[in-house]
Image (tube, rainbow, N blue to C red):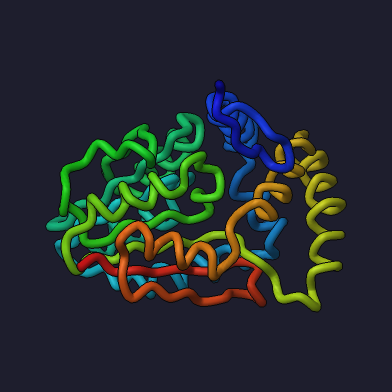
Length: 244
């Protein structure tokens, strides 16, 4: 029997989800940053700045940015880690990875980039000081497997940081739903000529584990001192955990 999972509000075969998510990000790659600025009013940049500060990357650190997309985090980490460090930009989607790689090269940063699946990371055990994933975990089919892989490649004492959309504060839920299911698809149609991908975005956020559930999943993956920070009334949340 074929295993099933969710793609937004649809129930699909696990193999089909991989292809459907790939189609979404192939479609939006060229307009990804423009749409992020429009959708969040620029707030995604503040959330990422907070994540970068919490990472505390220093010269010589080895950092893995998973589902790194257009390279915002990797760019900052590469500057902080310096020539003695090692920062990898990875993504499962080739279109997104190409955009991120080109942006880094245009900034004079020859950061290694790799097309790979977060559920099967091609790195040795205990290798990285920091592992980050920003707005990518919700698209992964087996989140528990991905979290376990992230812990595996962390050095003892290393930190995992997961920035993701989360459960918004209850009094804001109704206006947030109206914005998500009416305004976002409209923006997607007008700016990226793709309403369906942004409808999926809204649905995928609703299907993603809430703050406490994701905290428990990280603990079950073997991470300790797991905590989270609600950002913009829970529209997004940053979860962090340490490997001991």
